[in-house]
Image 1 (cartoon, rainbow, N blue to C red):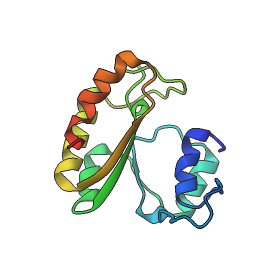
Image 2: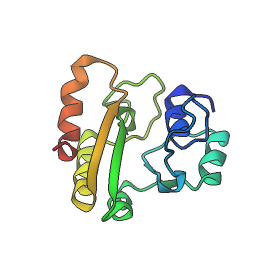
Image 3: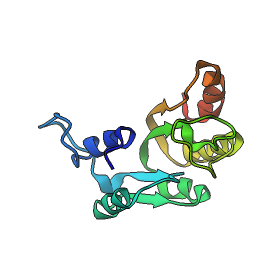
Length: 138
């Protein structure tokens, strides 16, 4: 789509040339996305073409990641906009308690090797972010 927020994954997978030629690439078939609510047609085609798994029901995520080493990239805008404002808000997101439970389940099923948290728009929400991600931070 050209939306910069999604281009980082495209670059990491070698789908978009971000100027890191010769660097190791992430195999897109090892990527699992959950909580995605707003994809355009082009994004859907790219994800399908490259074998990126999309888990529509968060309750299935932990099982999909069982016994795997995982790197968690968490955009806080996965939360419903009524909980956290977002520049590109999409309704129907998770509750903060639901996200925390999801991350607890993932941490119990998989080995977390790293994580990053993005898209919390104001410093006042840093405490909410810290509370939610606590299960995956050693």
